Length: 144
Image (cartoon, rainbow, N blue to C red; front, side, top):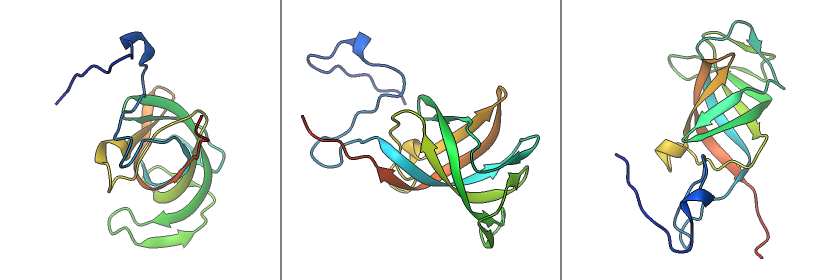
């Protein structure tokens, strides 16, 4: 379902793709410094190594994110850990990875906010992997 609403003193022209609104008092949306995600590689011609920087499509945002470190390799069916710190992930593999966005990006863990916790990894004009966010390291901003 799509819901439309207006905000006082905010023009439609000021709102851009990837913007997120939330409850300011309870759990305000914040940008993330990095996040840990479970990724399943579905269609990549080579190997995904640390340092790979594809575009992530998460909610309405399209932002390049760097695979900072590959933490674990998982069994795709059972979810059991098959190895720690793998060198690469290839087509058909699943793993836990640490991602760092290149621009400010608002994401949440899949268990707390489903729509902000799912993403697709796109490269070469196709979806190469999909994933869910396990945990987020929030970026703290000084209040003005």
